Length: 150
Image (cartoon, rainbow, N blue to C red; front, side):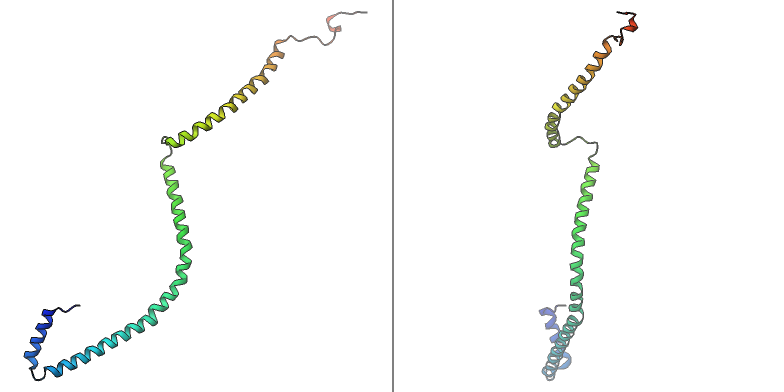
């Protein structure tokens, strides 16, 4: 609460009229001493509260703050992971970004020789099976044909 110059002037004029000019200096001294005692008492109470309440609470809060720091870091990491997963889920089914397509093209080009080699290997293993199926079966013994050479 601030008291301006006009308020102070009004209080002085009222005090002059009520108390009178004879007793005003004595009352002003008493008022000044009372204000001095009030300020001294209030500063002592403030100091005691600070020493007995605020400082012990701050000392007790330090270990708690230190214990909370790793949890806050973990919270930030988890929230970041969830945000990343949320973005991934939102992007499911959407077209790939140009960077991802550009990265996928060299991988597809590198896979083409492997696919071609696998197809060639499959064709070459199927070819001998076709050759054996096309040849007529030959008799194992000549005696089965009825040819007795003795």
